[in-house]
Length: 414
Image 1 (cartoon, rainbow, N blue to C red):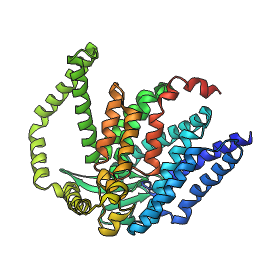
Image 2 (image 1 turned 90 degrees about the vertical axis):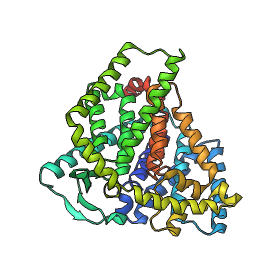
Image 3 (image 1 turned 60 degrees about the horizontal axis):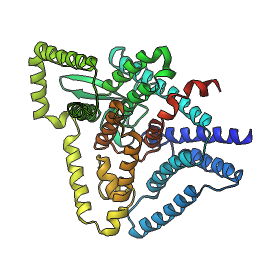
Image 4 (image 1 turned 45 degrees about the horizontal axis):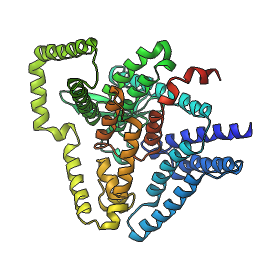
């Protein structure tokens, strides 16, 4: 009984770690001391659990040793921020703990159920915040400056989170940020929610269609160009792969698939015919003034700084990077491309391991799996949350989701 309580406490604390660190808004609002309390709780729980076991977890001991060695190397290189390095290593540590500590499936399912409620709250509150701010007179919202995003017109509601007001083509709308620090992070998060709900169909029961529709709507309401493009490009790549496999008779496609594709294309043609002129005017304005609507120009300037750092890499920095936080110390703007940022700061080896993890989790000849794989890989070109506790935990839960697809009813009864 004592072991069960400790494991449940560990899972709750792991969830709290994801809520109290970036990309969640608490990363801006809470002092570092408060954010380290759940981390300390995780370590204490884990120590107590391991003391009750006859055999130590060799993977955790090995990772602890490697982490200490890497921290020493980064210290010698002298360009990293310790708090950044600690959080990255701890995020990886969480996944190693969940995967190698032989946590009972019932307790993992307990984490899955917590995640279900977390997703539901995020979907409903995102939709409500968009409606309240844009159509109901901004009830409860006050203009605020948050962290490094004070240049945006940001508004905060303690119950609904943040809204970022921006000019979007010919409209001026409040973009939901929820309790995250940027709309692009929320766009990526709601993109992942689409797949989560699709794979948890049994557990969402008769509300499944409502929640899958809501997840798509909230994904669109973030107005995150990076998330939209990532999903669109991923759809095109996945469709091309399946069409190629179909041509070579590797897989079979039902007639209903072609009917849906025809309906989809038909809707696009109808929209283009009815609103073609307005679309062309908006696109022309977007192309000529793209810096007004997006951060593409700013992102290009950041990439130039990153490329300069890459050119000056030696063999040690190529393998282990300059150290987490290096780009922030070199350039105030930072880096918005996740792959570039973490290649520079962590080196090539962690990037290859990360890619291997993604392919291990999601590379299957199934439409949703491949779509998710490409969505994640492409999205990291515009968001820098690869090694955050929230994203790593979410990818892990999506990766082991197939373990619960057939066992959920049994575990729920248990």
